[in-house]
Amino acid sequence: MPAQTVLDVRNLTVDLLTGHGAVRPVDGVSYSIRRGETLAVVGESGSGKTVMNFAPLGLMPIGVKADVSGSVVFDGTELVGASEDKIRRLRGKSTGFIFQDPMSALNPARRVGRQIAEMAEFHLGMSATAAEARALDLLKLVDISDPAARLRQYPHELSGGLRQRVMIAIAIAAEPKLLIADEPTTALDVTVQAQILRLLKNIQSKLKMAMVLITHDMGVVAGSADRVVVMYAGRNAETGPVEKVLVSPHHPYTMGLIDAIPRREDAIGAPFRGLPGVPPMLAAPIVGCAFEPRCVHSVQSCKSHRPKLVETLDPSVFAACPVINDHLLERVS
Ligand SMILES: Nc1ncnc2c1ncn2[C@@H]1O[C@H](COP(=O)(O)OP(=O)(O)O)[C@@H](O)[C@H]1O
Ligand SMILES: [Mg+2]
Image (cartoon, rainbow, N blue to C red; front, side):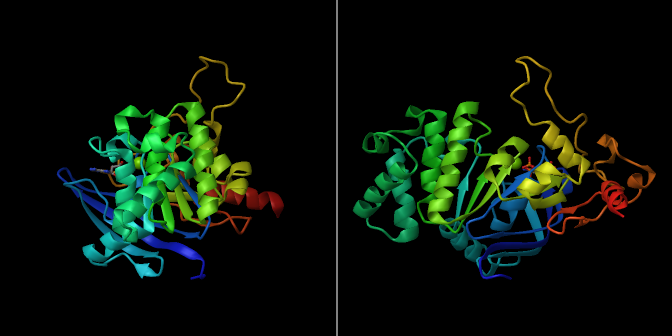
């Protein structure tokens, strides 16, 4: 593993045991992230993005038991099979989290300054006074104007965009090596979305953190990430450098997500540009390619053969579609 690797995930599989039986939302996924790098994880709702990132860190909703297998090495420590205590200690200090809905992640009854300061007290062992000063610095770092006044406010007194900035301040308070941002702009207005993404990128490069940016929107990937993992039905459909995957996608699902990016020339009120159909239900076993029922390039063998992720003509891009891959190979030979 290269020295700069912050997170190395190999063959990660997650089985969820719920009141309604077992499902496998993550099925043999591998990827890694280096220091200072942003990895986008993109896919429609239900494709396994959240479970894949949070189950290995022991973060699952109450009442859901996650059985994690494979290997997840974070900052040199194997998380799969580690004690809950070990995972808890790693999680708070070395990883920061940002969620879609800042209101549910913030404590409504406490001033935002206190919530930021607590992180610094707890994880960096700062005194209350030092932590207050750090909270002020962090609010400046996330570009909140009049930070001294904001420190004394409660979450409900802030706009959605400001709350997300506060969440970012909390997430980076303990100087994590890895920031996991799960749909950080999905709940925000379009104009605020762009500001928050820019802020995240800025802070990431200042602090040289690694970042996982989870999104359902390929438009977000385009301007914000170095590499991308495209998820479909719990598997990696395609992965590679963003500029390559966006310009010459090798999987029909990736193509569909790219087509779904809203464009400037789209008229107001134009029909929603998107992928027809819906992802498969995970409760039923998937035979063949999970994307086949929605795929315009599908051939007979797609119904019976589950495709593997393989190197494409470009050795930095891997895709799980033999139809497109063979077609491109034929064109060059
Ligand atoms: N709390 C839960 N209870 C039961 N099943 C869940 C729960 N969370 C996730 N799942 C299952 O895992 C799949 C992937 O979920 P998730 O990782 O949240 O998808 P995404 O983040 O890509 O929208 C869901 O489609 C569902 O089958
Ligand atoms: Mg999710």
